[in-house]
Length: 320
Image (cartoon, rainbow, N blue to C red; front, top):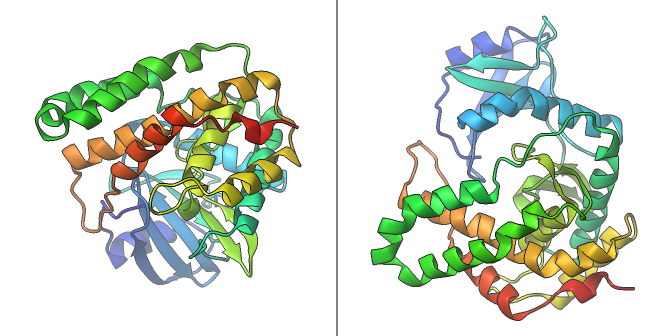
């Protein structure tokens, strides 16, 4: 949620005038995260969040993303609710970018991740998977192995000279994990696909919000589980935290049983989930995007996840 598109007060005033929210009072850019431009906005009606989509792929999907969020909100998942303008439109253009104004939820991401946080996240992810069962639309995964392959090919000349070990690692992992996404026997459904700590809110220890559905898609549920486990259950030094791993599995299983086929596929899913973010972070490092407040995350964190999963099988977490 970096700031790539700078908005003036005049820009935002004209935009907010399309809504029944009263006048714009204040605004500020939010720099946590990576993908889109995010502003915190205060109007006479209260606090909102404004997201400007910087990717063409995400922009085309924004009306569907808004429908996903509305669907989940109606089923009790704590997500921001898209706000319609006076014409009933949720997605509009602002400075040439598709824009979505949403309600702002209370809370903040945890400073120190505890098992109690992770158990709630595991349970809420399972609730989200259940809530998505009757969502009538299917968005293909925009961050699929074909996309990873394109990234790797684009980065290869740079990595071959600057980080040959990293290139070899992601190339071999792509070959190993790509078949997972052709597996038809695994349960599929609505996935968040980016459930990191900075996409959650907590207040007095209780989970109050799930944010950022830019990558939400129809995919294998076990892949979404692996993304979330990778994001929440490792230390800053790259080691797996047993208490956090067990808390995640416990929270998820209390809501949704996991099939044996998913347990068998879990090691490969963990590798695939690690590769997805290692590759995107390497891409951002090789080809940084311009912006006034841009966050670039360290790819080594997820290269280390790949190395860990090559040597460790976590599927036993989900066995009875």
